[in-house]
Image 1: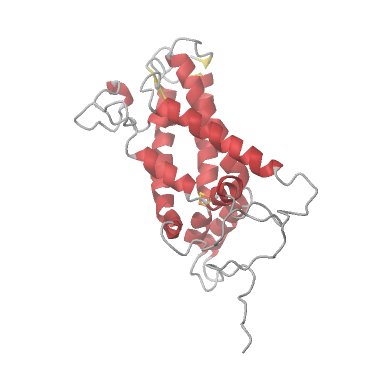
Image 2: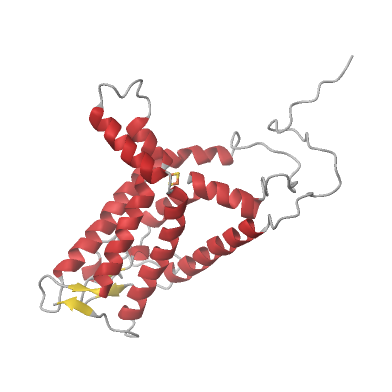
Length: 273
Ligand code: FES
């Protein structure tokens, strides 16, 4: 009787080409994964340091709140920064002030289709790159615990929409705190607004968002509005990777700017009032 080998790439099998070399590729296939790992690591290090700093997150004069602390929920938050109220106790150093939103934002990004591709290749190395053998013996995909949890991404999307609304509120209310207490615009307002617009671009370009508008529809023929919205989301979706990277940068930049102004290192240049 002849044994039948499973097809190459069958989950749970070790059916790989029997060659000793890791790869025959001569190009710099490792460059992309290395740069990706460096970029993700830089963001994680910066965000972790800032989230646990519990300081320089709020500019009283112009109501600038960094997105890393929004909504601010510790009883020790500056009262004006906690526009949605606080919990009854002051958080110890190991709890971020944005205790509710940050875990969902983290899970939203962690389970994002693009970031999965990024860290599967660059950090987990499954797969490392096309035609490069990976260090793992078995491949089970996302069919088992814990990776099956990646399917929760569609629910984290709704949480991300709510948090984007909160960030939008933060950026909007800051416009009502100019030098004389009325409407005003400073460089910080522009940074907050650009950040929130790009956050919306990232959130709405999510694959789950595309499914919300276009999924399960047998035909768009009788749904012109839904078709229009699905088309717009699909356009954004083609740039999802770009928005994923840009928003990592704008989040850090926005936080860094607020930190500098809040700490008195720089003052906020005013454009109007
Ligand atoms: Fe990237 Fe949903 S696929 S955020």
